[in-house]
Length: 104
Image (cartoon, rainbow, N blue to C red; front, side, top):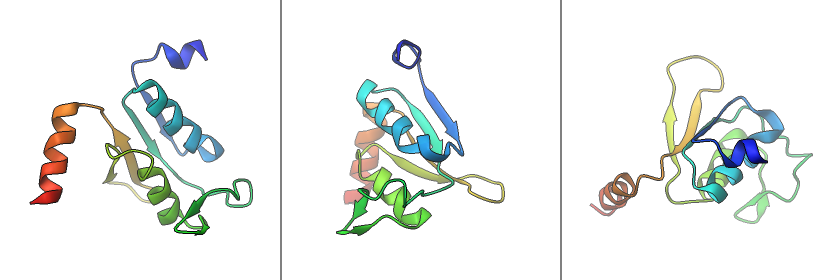
């Protein structure tokens, strides 16, 4: 726990079952992070729901994670396979600009 608490950022490429835990730790500690979710593991995490239904697909899982915090963004990376990164910088200036762009 001390290692994570003292880090300046978290990064996880294809973290399997740890994906949500990485996002949750980053949010709790307000650390910049990037994760590239690769698998949903719906049977291991049946409590994950999105709109009242089980999170069963990778797009659903990414949406489930994005809804954890308004600062979480998505970016497609230039390689094949699971290549959609979710990230947050917790840079208040970037967050305000993003929110204003959503309104415009």
